Length: 511
Image 1: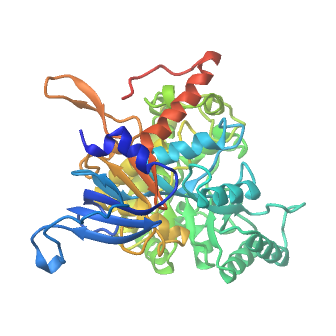
Image 2: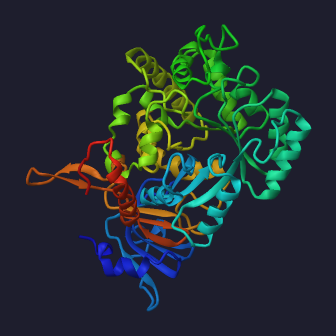
Image 3: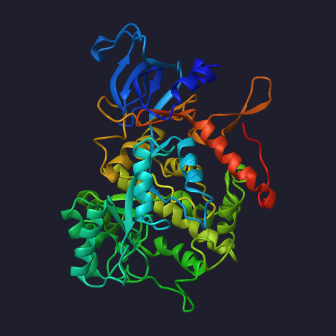
């Protein structure tokens, strides 16, 4: 067993604060830039910053050292021989759930840290408000809570006493939230003139923008329209098929369709991609090329919708029994009036439509990425049976399913997300001068992304038995070292305390 798992050594470094000088010894580095793994290497962290990376070996053209760094008497040292080190993951579409979903913010934040997530783009502060999100971000920055770095966005209209429908009012609102401390704005769609004014004003104040193009507004401005007006990222996929319609302007809805009924909404959504121009057509190619040329990022959040193509899979995910809080279990239960809880009468026809949609959607994302488009990995957990942390690792697997290589997937989930959040000069890759946001895992994630799941991955032993392996071991956020397994143990304790009230999921083995 590696020395870094020694409890005394972990206690020495896991203070929740950065160290004056910390040396990570003997790691195999996957740096997030797209370069191949290299190592063994020693990484020096001074307070919250990576100050030196030394690969020891025999290749002079790589400026390697033949010997390891010699620690000083006051250096903290972690011996990590053979372990893999990655940039901390960036969840590019995340929400800190509110009281209707989760028992506490601590539950969510520790699930993220337990999966190596060191940065979250909190898209909209929808469930707790901007002031709460800003305070959590401040506490995290001051190392007063165990939490990733939080990039706070605010939903359009926050703080207003009426719906903003005038372009000048929209511009004034943008100025207000910029002064209040928001780093970005989450939009769901607006009248075209109001949307355009909002996006222009946001650019003037260096605010990031993201949009879920709700069907109520997409006929006035689809994703390509808003990208032309300066939108920084398209969330999910709404608005993209509509930009590729060739024989209609709006979706062909059933005559009894009701947008506020979640089952209606998701059933119709599963047919959108088939109504758009096909892969390889001129309209398909032109749409992708224009998104790429505009620099608009896409954050597909594949994972949050997979229940639409396989409801049984998401209902019975093996992490539910020990990691899904009572509040989430209740929130996930079918209810056509609750966001994302649409499985009241979800059948074969609906799932088949969604499977066809995934094939087209993934083709679009792969083509976009192959042509130089900027992608981010976002989980949107807290909905449709998706649990924080676990959902992001599932997103990495789905990007891999879409045809992106494992090495590129890691880059999307690290440097890609940092670029979308506008913080790529600070974090997102393992480079000298960047913030020490890192995760350490004993197994090679390039061979199997499942080793990043917090509950581990079942593997066969030499004697024919099976055991759980994997899971992030250490998460380093801005130089502070967290035992990722302790974070998840705390979550299991929270869920166990609720078990007396009845569990709706079957228990599974956990390492």
